[in-house]
Amino acid sequence: MYLNKKKYEDGMILKVDKPIGWTSFDIVNKIRNTLKLKKIGHAGTLDPLASGLLIVCTGKYTKKIQEYQNFDKEYTGSFIIGKTTPSHDLETEFISDNSIKNISEDEIIKTTKTFIGNQNQIPPKFSAIKVNGERAYKKARNKENVILKPREVKINKFEITSINLPKIDFLINCSKGTYIRAIARDYGKKLKVGAFLNELKRTKIGNISIKDSMSIDKLSRRDDEVRPPTMRDRSLTECLSRRRAIEVEENPESAFKTMNEFSGCF
Image 1: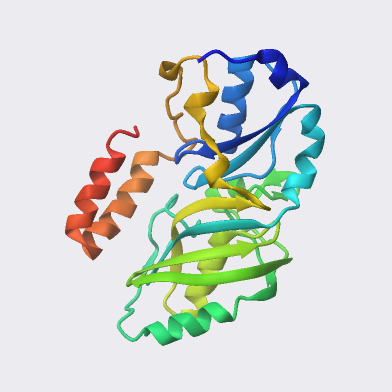
Image 2: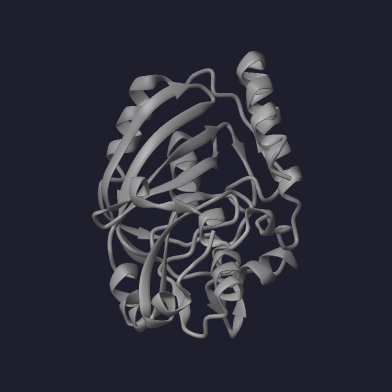
């Protein structure tokens, strides 16, 4: 695929469907190196284990990055209740396993409603927020004590789309700066059994939909140039193996299908 480099240098808004395993910086770096661009940046980080809509601005449109960052975001994904991890997702290993036999669907729905509106949310310790000049996640990985101040966020919509315990599927629309991993953590605390974020996909930024996005391979000169980078500090295979282990426990037949789908990702 041949690209008009000048068009990108002048300025474009790129809507990319980020795959699992790529950092947001990996996406920007790939486009920068492919097109030899000087001015380029993204408008909102997605964790390596998350997928979905990432807006990348080039040229004069890098001035619009802050504007896009301020837009509300929409996500779909799933929580697993009854288990917890230090990072509140699959990046780290399980540290607790609690019974969920007394958790009812009615309790799940009622708990969801408590999140609607303004919230004082404490960001995850495994986050890029700086503490005394150092990223919080670096301190957390070194098992240092990390204290982060609450931040005001707003949850506009929080819907449960499917319940198949221990997995709960959701749709969340929220303000800038909201951590879905922190919602998973707090959700588990309110249910008194713990929870972590199992899957996450960003589907909207403002009025821009994932349906309008393109895959990273379409932004490369040659498809064979594109391959998932290795996740820093943690194997993607290891993270996904924990997800598959849960799915095997929950539904052996569907889990086998999921393993086949992921087998070509590494």
